[in-house]
Image (cartoon, rainbow, N blue to C red; front, side, top):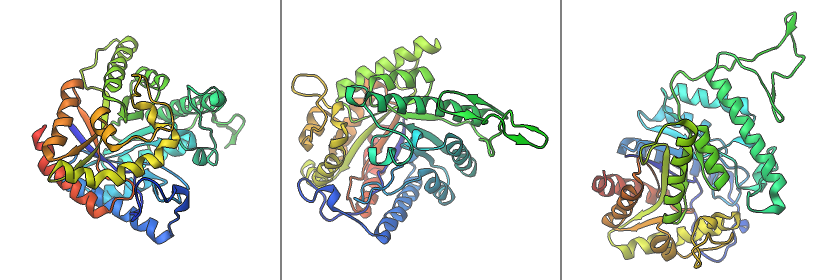
Length: 384
């Protein structure tokens, strides 16, 4: 089982938890934000030394609240590549419609090459309107009729951008003429002729993987049909199993090849390890509640199961006990407790790719460092 680490990459907070302050009441200065960035890099170095397979960064913009302060995971990943030896470096996720697709392709190829083939191209469509609408796209939802036009635009941009990115990365020269993107732009004069094709520089020197976040039924089908890997997070365990198996069915129907039980799929679990279950619960509660105070308004609760057995409505703010015991999206307790939850998913799904999320919004990075050591030395040997 390949096991990676994912961090949101936020600032350290002394007031994390439920209730006040509201996220928008916080604001952090440049020095605090940069300190967090350096500490994120430190955690990547620790993860490499501890033998984790991968380290995942994220892309977010304008988050003065301090939750996610890395706007370009590829750039930070390139720095991390120079400080590490073996760990693979992924993006969870590059928000493709917020990029010019050729710039994203160039930057990823640079990271992949300078790291000796350790880059992972993680892609997503985005969740935060503040970012999307200032960087050239919209954010909608497949199940919200009021935002259908925004969702349609975002999906169209994402689909064409990914076609462009693959063409650019995989071919010596290429052209693409779609409804959203047109490369090369017609009629560009060049040295006595006109530009008919483009060539991306640099191109990858090594094979690369593409992984996409799966948060809706249409995206699940699209990722499986595309042949990429799908990342599953924050879903009730029965929803995860259903969607995990549906992914394999769509993949086989499209490609004519049956997947192994855990192939082409990654599970993400939030974790906290301590000497007792009670200590772990006390340690992680404020971080859990801050996590949901941050993400609840963006509809993340739709992955949870409500009392009626259906997906919870958007805006739910769950308790830690619900996340741990009923939903089984958070593995919290002793090393044995956390290993048991991981083992449950290994047996239920055949997990081959696992990403652990051990640093909650606001956590001190010394605590994250401790959690990485506990996971590596106390938990993973019990499940490998």
